[in-house]
Length: 361
Figure 1 (cartoon, rainbow, N blue to C red):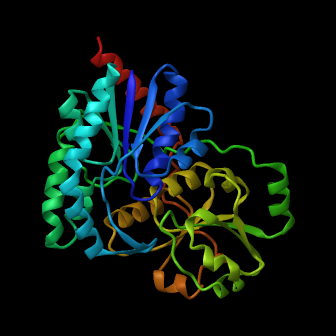
Figure 2: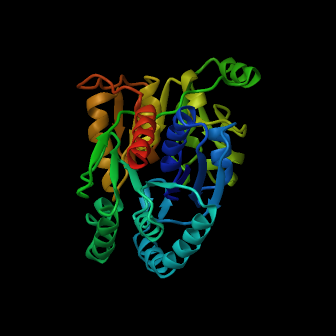
């Protein structure tokens, strides 16, 4: 069996979700050949999957939203990129279809969440499973009218799948597909190198993981100095390196090749934008969330509404965030309901394995 995974290149969240799933799927089906197709850099998967063998094929399957930074959307840039993408995607699909046919294996396609994967599925006659908490049709339909034709096109693509594995914190995803529901999809943390952990603990401060995804943004370094009793862990890969020269003493840039999930167990809170994978990781470890609101991204409101129900949290406006009013010293608001189980990656892996068994009876 060849498992071909089409992953959105919009940030790292979709890739992180698929890595948690692939770790579990490899345990269940170690003989399956894993091929990851995305524009997210190969090194991300090498770090996340470690010793799990996989092949990598560079491909941009969708555009998503073009962002100026982690908190703002570039609408005109998104429209232009969508227009260009639709001019080239068919030839890219033809190239991948030719390659897949040449492998002479049974193929199962997983998509998180490019609707164009349905064209590949139809072209080679292989089944397609979507794994998602939203679709681009949900997003584009809530933007201005110029996006509506792309929402319609995405919806048509999603409707040609064979199954939807619905993740928590989900939008409508009205695709007319059979569905399976799963819980949180966070990977398990690995032990930190002893020297790194000792160094971080030696600051003797409450530790905040400062996480704003692959797009990053500029923040006035003096804002960190307002919280001198806290140590901020900042992933180097997320931010413009020029800012690091001006960070105060209570910031530790993580230059080591270590995942966010591996650092969270020693953290007091996660300071972040609304993001599916970050939320799953924090909830799985019972880490408090200080969440900065994000404008013009419809998924954000659904994520925050869900967090109010199932996680200890504080919600911060974007304006307050840029002023340094991060509320790290204030108590968290308790959730209305019990936390979700962190068993979704295994659940999804089992669904995929059982789906393959059913299709090949």
